[in-house]
Length: 429
Image (tube, rainbow, N blue to C red; front, side):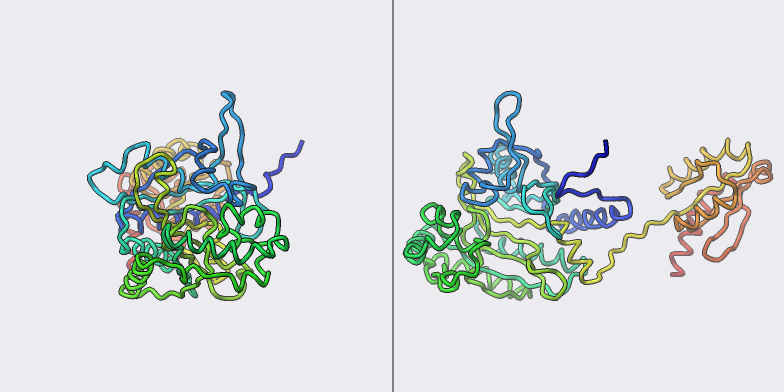
């Protein structure tokens, strides 16, 4: 029987994994600079957490979750996103009582959604996201957005566009909700069954419908910005002022609606302008979700965050021709020829690796020529040639594969010599 990978998943092979490792390293670095700390949550949770946290009117909950019943009869779901999981952990572990507030967290890990696979969208995908809980200061909104923008820019992405909107507070949303119902209700039969159901439950979600996005009522729908309370207006203006102060440009789009029910006030998406990326240009999105902690059984605690797909990031980098510095080369390759050299080769390789060098050797009993070719293929800086003669004299031939220069080096001085030679080569670049 031939087994094949499940649809919507992928194998990340060694020639690709270097890019992933570089991006993950960049994530850890930028979050360290912004003083965000990593959190790791389970890959499955109680189904009700996502129904309450994400919203039972969302496509994610209605159509896209991988849900199963365990042997104890409990309904569990592979996480389709991580904000609800982080907030659950925040409440369960009483992080709201920590001395240092707000609590600034980030995560990197696989999420699962049953949707139609397409370029940059998988059924198992990897998200990087941040969550800040405990502060309703507009400055933290600007910080979260700045972190996301800086992350993309430091990876070399160009033509980025930040799109902002405010979804308002409870008072604003109530007024806007009434206006949306009045706008869509007379012709709701012209919309899909999902939108008909959303009309009473959450009419704002109609604006996010992919099936009816071109319906004429979409363009003329009441804008949330016209219904903002004074408090929400002032909040939104302050967020914009902070962004302007740190030099981040943006456009305001009153039709921007995030796909999850928990958002309020600040909402944003980072898009990419330019050809070759397809019709869906959004790279990441996020916003404020005051009230979510109460939904999962905790005390009132304001929050804001964003999430982005590593797969879509890689697609964008490829589209723009950005090259990540992921040199996959060896410091040295040990070539052992003969019975005695093969006996002492493992100790030499071990000592070099213990010193922090990236080293490999032959395990296929190749001849000298085949081992030299292997050293070349793996872009080794040096070939370390150990024959019967070298083994008898306690030396090893150090050959630069860049210049062809050869030097006889005592085996006990090999580690120090290789490190010195590598340092010289680096200075000469």
